[in-house]
Image (cartoon, rainbow, N blue to C red; front, side, top):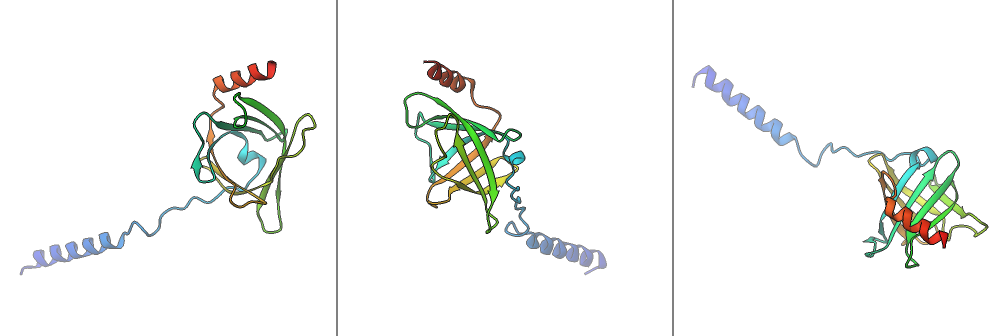
Length: 162
């Protein structure tokens, strides 16, 4: 064997070892969660899953958070055949376990939300997971969206005008 063949063989071995060293399981980027703040949740969100299942056909929930006013507007169609716009205020607190808790009240003296929620995941790519504080099986997955579809806003407006 001449010296050129030996160098080529060594280069091939090194290349093979380098390729084997690059595993898909190693060094995968894991996106760190964001802090749960009014600034990071501001904007429009669509409920995409509830209790590990997609929403039933014809039902939906969109929520828009206003960071400065600490208000929200929720467009939902769950318990009625018509769309509804529900408004109110919200707050975010960090508890002693370093969990972020979101809770809210409804406008017009209609009381508090049924649950407070632990925001277990909030990511820059646009997803957020809420778990009911008192019922760990009640899990909601939200996806950031540009806005609430105009036809839903119009339907809710028509219903509230009646």
